[in-house]
Image (cartoon, rainbow, N blue to C red; front, side, top):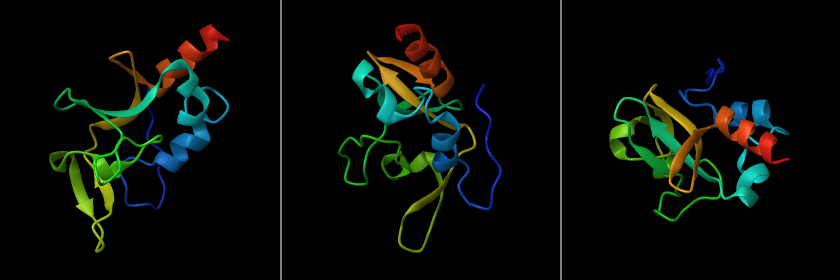
Length: 113
C-alpha cells in the first residue's frame, strides 16, 4: 500500500519522492499514459477522486497539487502555491473511470507488458 516518504518538505504528499520510488515501474505518468492512465488524486476521507489539474483548471499531464479542491488543501505558501494537503489524499491514476493507486497501476502495466 502507499507509504509516505518522510523528508524535510512541508508537503504531506511528496510527489517528487513518489516519482523516484516508482520510476521504471509504470507507476508514473510518463510511463503509463499510453495505456490511458490519467494522473489523479483520491481523498480517502471523502471518497472523492480528482483528475490532476493546473491552477487554471486545465488538465495536467502529471500530478499537480495546484488544481485540487480548496477543502483538500491545508497549507499554501506566501505566493499561493499549495504545499500541503490532507493526509488522507493519495496520488494515483484514473483509467476508464476507475481510480488506480500507483501500486495498482504498476501491476496493470506489468500485466500488459
